[in-house]
Image 1 (cartoon, each protein chain N blue to C red):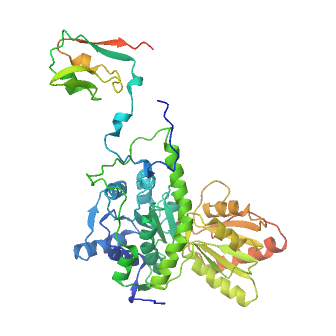
Image 2 (cartoon, chains in turn orange, green):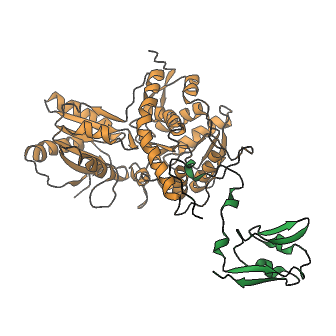
Image 3 (cartoon, rainbow over the protein chains, first blue to last red):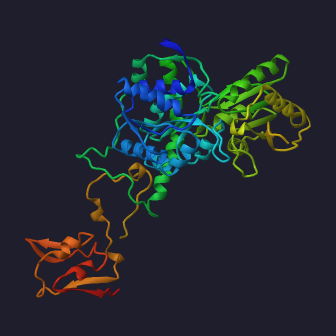
Length: 398
Length: 95
């Protein structure tokens, strides 16, 4: 088993992603800088200026143009990347859906940031959670190491002929994107071998086999094309584990659709995405030392939604808290909560599930906050089988 | 127009059209309310109609206007409007 680690460098999450982009060396990058994604574009532009990549870099005038240029280049058969955050993603919106429905395997690192307003540049997941129904695959990264590895993985996933969907690689704004950590970087050639050469099925530039992208699609066939998209997303759930295994074989780094941490015998489980999971893991260890059967479940993929893995990990517990770093204003909790709760309807056991909305606009989440969540689960919910409130706001002043 | 429609498994992904010139298969003639008709005796074959027709529905052979492609003509009336000798008239479709 070869675990080839080329070198370890102190990098921010943004730098780690830019480094992955250098290794991927996409044909086209069209991007517009926005905090806290700016450094990705900045560092990648350096690689372009220094001739370290062959990429055609298109500095566009807006994110709407960035995604439009990506769609055009991808339809022409290029391997394409961009990156954005928050309001930038919102401005792309129209074309974000078009990229997915044209089945163009664009890879887009997204540095999660609160959507305006009020205007705020710090981390929450409202930007990408809003795009959960756009047809993009979504990965949520815990740290810079994962952001680096997932960016490489995303290329393979997006371009798999059985999937052909664009991928967002989400990392937490500032918390991950601007914090420096030691990142294990793989050998350039190994990365290139892993992603392989992109062979598009159709290209606008192929005059021998002309193709039309984006024609009008009305009542008679639009539905069938949406159905294809839906089936591709379901396929992705079956195919991604094989790609993850191959990644592990090559790079020695193990990934699953969800990370189940000490959940097998857990009575109480906290579910969290991205960097917050690190804090939860620490508290789980602490509670375990005191004999409390606590666990952490961290979905790495939110699209496709790994329902089976989530239900299997949660079904034998007594009480579950789902942490949502975004609000969907339904009055029934955040997006992660509602989907997990819906999945658990079929579980048979139906443990108690509560929601904690937290960290909006970059509000810090402290170990004490996580301890409070576990203690809520231990107390009223697991013992008395009572829920004071299903929807809670963790860290918001009352 | 009663062709059997294909299932999601039988069509190219993403709404792509993977053959050239397939627009000809899309018969739009049924949209028409008014139908252009030509008085052959008056026609001077200037081909203004052919130049202006937005649907390429003027049939030309050996440099002469020979008729309309009624499978694609939507009856917009531009040909009748631009004809310098007014040999084209728009007649209400009888259905």
